[in-house]
Image 1: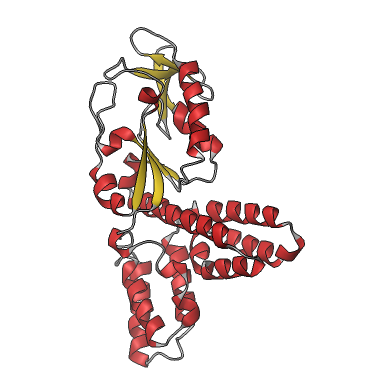
Image 2: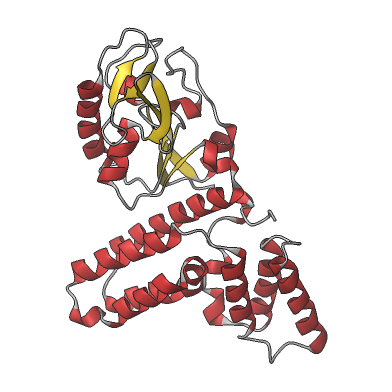
Length: 315
């Protein structure tokens, strides 16, 4: 299985003993499952900025919007040391061709959401680790997530879908020859984008239609921004159901009466939360092949990520 898609990851999640206590937080889903598809680029900001293993624990203090990184017991301020590491490292990351990043939750350097920030000795879950903030600030379109949130199947599928889509967009930029290529790229992703945001899909359609009047760099930058913003919105059962019904419309006149009844029952069962998305998708893909529906066969909505990840197998 190819794993040429580069994804940054907190080193401790790969089993590296780099935590303050000399331990690790090996996440087997990351290494054993995602590792079949992704090439991991590990980072530990604490070790990277020269701190030893083991070391004194640290925490964030002060203004949540601009916190200080301070050792918990001796109150040594390591903020500037860490920020200098961040400034250098985000520039190095430009050469890694990353398509995503998985951070360690709750870390004062790498936590992405709701990291504790202490004010007057009292913690509030309102901050972001210094390294995570630097990465997000430097790469605002990069798909990012915390390992703890990947237990949520909706969040997991959304993150992984964005990683694969970002890789496809980067490959498109490397091979693109003109506006016609962008029209084709956009056409293949029509249903996928609609499942995330019909509103942004319409905006993207207007952008592509105006493509001849825009400078190439402006057009591609704007399209990339809209694509990743749309995909960052989770696809819902309602939006997926609308797309599934739209797909059925391409061959409903070709279906036999019992086939149409069966398909409608499957779509209704998915909409009611009784079966996972993989069930109607599998049946629709069968009819796409049976009726040789070339347009639908190219739609990324039907296969946005490898089936082996089983991301659409949950209710």
